[in-house]
Length: 269
Image (spheres, rainbow, N blue to C red):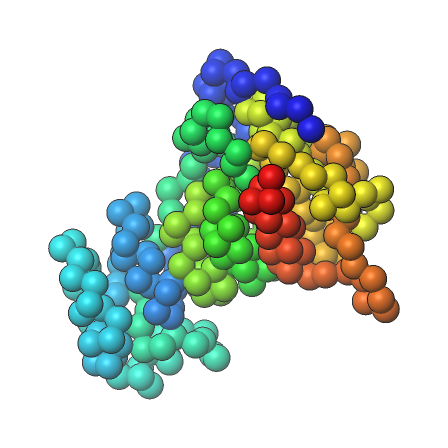
């Protein structure tokens, strides 16, 4: 695959691709668990309303951080913390009531990626399950992706479930919500990325295609997969080499396998 032309700087001023400032992010919500809360504490863009923790969690998780501008910690008993959170929340004795992160514009994300870098992006086409989105955030962060792009509507908003599944990646990896995914894909192409859609009917596997340079992986929701218009805007449809009676992966597992293959291929080259 040859390199695309450089990102056109004049595109950066067009805001139509990204969600407006009042995107459907909702109000404050609880995040919980060691990784999710401590990652949020280390993010200067995250706004806290409350920070609660048991005595044990304060000693184990918060005391070693020594953050100069950390919010005041409210000491709480485990039963009281259980009552603050949804049933079954695995909180490890620590939780925070936070505001959604400020929205990032797509042009801003693309401009922040260093010139000439072989960066990776993940694009999600209407993936609504917060656990899947959180798990994809975690994998994308682990494999060094530059950001996650998802739709404004029909996509999981920030939530405690998403943050828990992301295990801290929600506050590490830039996440952009766009109004029109097809137009966003075209903008990503202008920034020099090959947009590769994952679909079972792809003629080649990702490994066989051997993509190089800047690559954006495009994944669809479980069941419906990529929408027609999304497919048409992808440069190529590729598949993973699955076989057997169950030949489809959960979208978060597919994202992890595909990201690993991109990183492995780059290392091999």
